[in-house]
View 1 (spheres, helix red, strand yellow):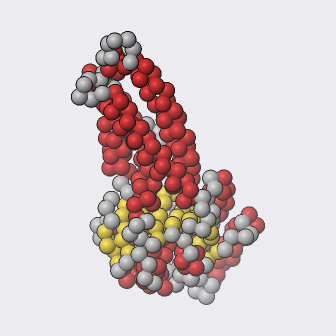
View 2 (cartoon, rainbow, N blue to C red):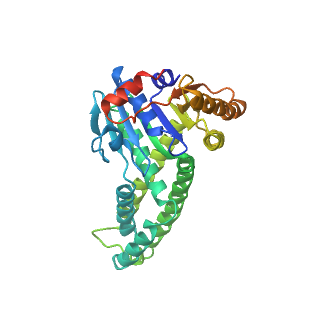
View 3 (cartoon, one colour):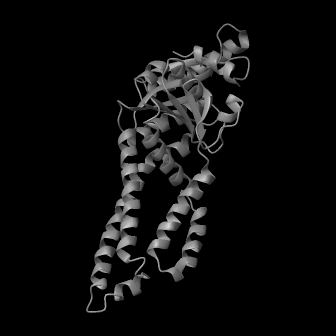
Length: 328
């Protein structure tokens, strides 16, 4: 199920409750697709990154080669927020009068730890990756954070698009107002004095720069929203364990993704107890079936693949390759 789904998509998200093996499953899928000759980029959006530990090597915010046809990167929330705020700060400085630079810096520092700042910055980075990586890769595989964080992240493009549209509308009004001021009477410097402009940095140039930034962000969020809601291009795989809480969280996450217009392509039940390894594991497997019955009742139409618990940790390229061979 999993590899069949991956072969038909260009963007694949993996999500689910923390600790169920999302990184291992997403990495195994990416490795299997790379072995088939597809150019794959594996991207971790989870602040608690595990790609480096999994592949037993350093992975950072720039793509690095993990295997033939497979690159990987970990989006660094702190670095992403810093880049985001530097860009916003530069735009605000162009908008505001020079003597208000201190107020701009104060506003930026207060914003750094604001609720939702990391999510907004990460989502903008995801939009950038989707836009730019499409030229170099056939498949993007995203290993996402635990369910609640991911659900909020997936809903952000629509909210950010609406927010950016509002800013553009306000800029339109401000631009018309400043244009009137610049042409008032015989002294055309009135508007520049009010808005902090001068001959070398006229208001019109600042307005053009701000408009360009906002339009670029709007286009990126709009393109990401289109990509996420296109079932022919994008799918979401929920990874879970056959336990009560992961099953209930999976059902809730599925509902949230559907409301956001994202297609869930399938379920992967990871770490299933083997059937023929003694009475304890046999009894454990029967308990798992009770929870999976709840899952089948709630999501009867979703394809599902079960992966049996292995005896050793999946760490390093060879172990991942063996794991990938068990995917279908």
